[in-house]
Image (cartoon, rainbow, N blue to C red):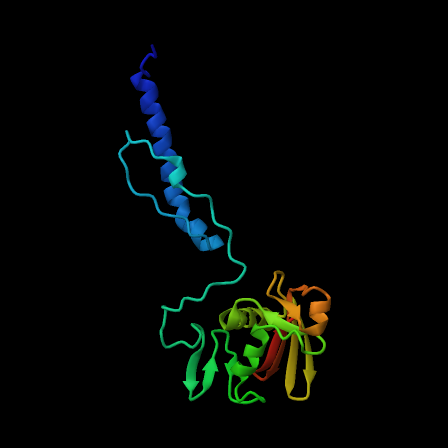
Length: 204
């Protein structure tokens, strides 16, 4: 016959559990903010209650791409761009997407770099995450370029060309050459600007 646990030991065990849960509750908001995790909050419970440790999941792996909150502002184009004039869109980092290019608008030209073209001669950079992923990655690349970090700069007449090392996967190389090489991962971004107007951008 098992002897009942002494009241003192049971109280100490409950106190230790309550202390651990309290520490988790204090650390949870800072961990979520710093690492982009989505750890759950802790509901209060009585000291005598014993929480099930399986109800506290392990930290989720941070996403390789920042998420776009589509509900944050329904007026934003692709959840990111604000229309400042008819058909002129401004990104959070100050890049502009305007009418132009063979496709009729720079955004439509950018869309070509969100899907592969296996029959296109040479290489074709494809962004991860569709248009939303492409726009977020381009803004991130421009932020590095403005700080003169992780980037090189060239000037060709009125255009500025940045090559930015992103330090993570941002897409892959497609086209005929990319297919021949089994679509290698792209970790850099080529960004061509006319002042702050995006002419083109693609990963490689």
